[in-house]
Length: 178
Image (cartoon, rainbow, N blue to C red; front, side, top):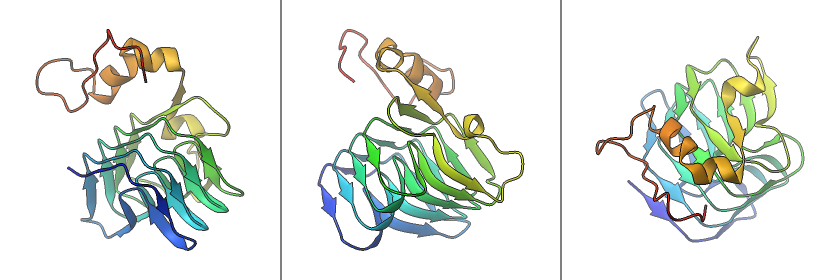
């Protein structure tokens, strides 16, 4: 469980709010959050700059992501990953080519991408999908409105439809800030 609210400004590649690059079938980022702005040249993400074969689960980003190319609210580069599930991002994402609200560039068929959400804004869910035949934007995640986040609907979905005491994401519905 890692939490970061520091801005990361690196004029280099592979910069993430939590980790620059995660690689390997058994590599896992779980239950992490970033609230700082993440800035760099290529492969920049709110949680990780790049993920190759690993897993990202139950993570969220509220910071902005700024890069030249390959930028995403969760990760800038996804290559044949095992899973990215139950993640969300609220920050703005800006960059050149391969820029998406959740993921910048997705190459190769992922094992599982499910229950991922981004606050509405500019851009697609995934900047570019390559080498994953039949995979569509809506298969990778959903864009939600501020009202949907405020209502508790997204929190409920991130918890896989559970609302008991054994959930990771919690929300005070009387607080209307997102």
